[in-house]
Length: 95
Ligand SMILES: [Zn+2]
Image (cartoon, rainbow, N blue to C red):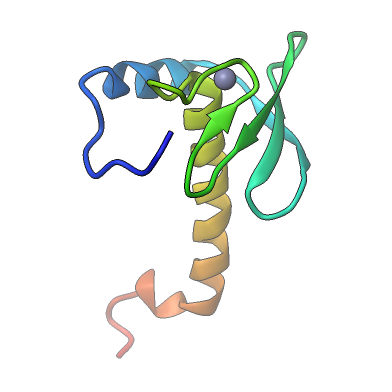
Protein backbone atom coordinates (compact mmCIF):
# COMPACT_ATOMS: atom_id res chain seq x y z
CA UNK A 1 0.00 0.00 0.00
CA UNK A 2 1.47 3.39 -0.89
CA UNK A 3 1.98 6.27 1.50
CA UNK A 4 -1.16 8.04 2.67
CA UNK A 5 -1.39 11.46 4.19
CA UNK A 6 -4.48 10.63 6.17
CA UNK A 7 -5.51 7.43 7.91
CA UNK A 8 -8.65 5.82 6.57
CA UNK A 9 -11.85 5.72 8.57
CA UNK A 10 -11.16 2.10 9.40
CA UNK A 11 -7.68 2.75 10.74
CA UNK A 12 -8.65 3.61 14.36
CA UNK A 13 -10.33 0.20 14.59
CA UNK A 14 -7.12 -1.53 13.55
CA UNK A 15 -5.15 0.62 15.95
CA UNK A 16 -7.38 -0.47 18.80
CA UNK A 17 -7.31 -4.12 17.79
CA UNK A 18 -3.53 -4.05 17.48
CA UNK A 19 -3.19 -2.78 21.03
CA UNK A 20 -5.15 -5.74 22.34
CA UNK A 21 -2.98 -8.28 20.56
CA UNK A 22 0.28 -9.54 21.96
CA UNK A 23 2.87 -9.83 19.25
CA UNK A 24 6.59 -9.65 19.05
CA UNK A 25 9.22 -9.23 16.39
CA UNK A 26 10.77 -12.60 15.79
CA UNK A 27 13.28 -11.54 13.22
CA UNK A 28 14.51 -8.40 11.54
CA UNK A 29 15.56 -8.91 7.95
CA UNK A 30 17.07 -5.51 7.36
CA UNK A 31 15.81 -2.16 8.49
CA UNK A 32 12.32 -2.49 7.04
CA UNK A 33 11.48 -6.20 6.93
CA UNK A 34 10.20 -7.98 9.98
CA UNK A 35 8.86 -11.35 10.93
CA UNK A 36 6.26 -10.99 13.66
CA UNK A 37 4.64 -13.73 15.65
CA UNK A 38 1.47 -13.92 17.62
CA UNK A 39 2.36 -16.33 20.43
CA UNK A 40 1.01 -19.78 19.64
CA UNK A 41 -0.24 -18.64 16.28
CA UNK A 42 1.12 -17.89 12.87
CA UNK A 43 4.10 -15.86 11.82
CA UNK A 44 3.76 -13.03 9.39
CA UNK A 45 6.26 -11.21 7.24
CA UNK A 46 5.75 -7.48 7.41
CA UNK A 47 7.49 -5.06 5.11
CA UNK A 48 7.52 -1.38 5.94
CA UNK A 49 8.82 1.07 3.41
CA UNK A 50 7.52 3.10 0.52
CA UNK A 51 4.76 0.58 0.42
CA UNK A 52 3.62 -1.52 3.33
CA UNK A 53 2.67 -5.14 3.08
CA UNK A 54 2.06 -8.21 5.19
CA UNK A 55 2.11 -11.88 4.31
CA UNK A 56 -1.44 -12.28 5.64
CA UNK A 57 -2.55 -10.31 2.60
CA UNK A 58 -3.04 -7.09 4.51
CA UNK A 59 -1.73 -3.77 3.35
CA UNK A 60 -3.42 -3.86 -0.03
CA UNK A 61 -6.49 -1.80 0.68
CA UNK A 62 -6.08 -1.44 4.44
CA UNK A 63 -3.39 -2.07 7.02
CA UNK A 64 -3.75 -5.26 9.03
CA UNK A 65 -3.09 -5.53 12.76
CA UNK A 66 0.34 -7.04 12.11
CA UNK A 67 1.45 -3.95 10.23
CA UNK A 68 0.02 -1.64 12.86
CA UNK A 69 1.61 -3.61 15.66
CA UNK A 70 4.98 -3.71 13.92
CA UNK A 71 4.85 0.05 13.50
CA UNK A 72 4.20 0.34 17.23
CA UNK A 73 7.16 -1.87 18.11
CA UNK A 74 9.47 -0.19 15.65
CA UNK A 75 8.52 3.32 16.70
CA UNK A 76 9.06 2.39 20.36
CA UNK A 77 12.53 1.20 19.44
CA UNK A 78 13.19 4.35 17.48
CA UNK A 79 12.12 6.50 20.42
CA UNK A 80 14.63 4.69 22.61
CA UNK A 81 17.40 5.52 20.15
CA UNK A 82 16.47 9.16 19.89
CA UNK A 83 16.03 9.57 23.64
CA UNK A 84 19.62 8.39 24.08
CA UNK A 85 21.07 10.90 21.69
CA UNK A 86 18.75 13.76 22.60
CA UNK A 87 18.38 13.44 26.36
CA UNK A 88 17.44 17.12 26.71
CA UNK A 89 13.99 16.27 25.33
CA UNK A 90 13.01 14.51 28.54
CA UNK A 91 14.17 17.34 30.79
CA UNK A 92 13.12 20.65 29.28
CA UNK A 93 14.63 22.68 32.13
CA UNK A 94 18.22 21.95 31.04
CA UNK A 95 18.99 24.45 28.34
ZN1 LIG B 1 -1.07 -9.06 8.50
